[in-house]
Image 1 (cartoon, rainbow, N blue to C red):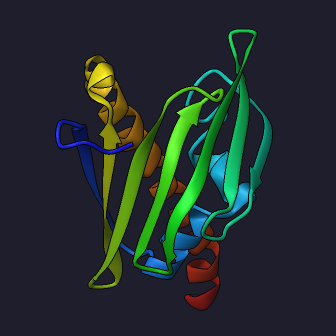
Image 2 (cartoon, rainbow, N blue to C red):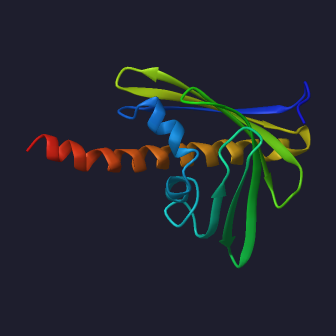
Length: 158
C-alpha cells in the first residue's frame, strides 16, 4: 500500500479548548462523525449510514448520498493508540485504498492534530482537493467540539 513515492498530504489543526481524548474519540463515534466528517453541514449530501468497529483490524463504512449517487467510504483501523495516534486505510467503494495517520499532541488547554494522508502516485491530481477536504473537516470538528463545550461552560459561569 505504501511506497517511497506516495504523495503525502498534511494538514495541521489546533483545537484551542478540546482535550486530546475528546478529539481522538470524535474519530470513532458514529454520532460525531456524522456531524463533522460528513453531512449537510459540510457539503450537499445525506448521511445514510455510519458504522465503525473501533479496534485494530476493525473496519468502518461511511455511506453518503451525493447528487443521487451512493458513495461508501471504507477503511480498516491499523493502529489505535488513544488519545495519541490513529492510523487507518481510506478508500471509496472497495477501490484502491490510501493510508491516513492522525497524530494528536496536547497543547495548553487544547491539542494539535497533524493529519497525513498518503496517496498513491496515481492520485497526485487529488492532493489539493484532499488537503482542502481534510482542512474543512477538521474545522468542522472544532466547531462541533466547541458547541459541546459551550453549554457546560455557560452553566459553570452562572
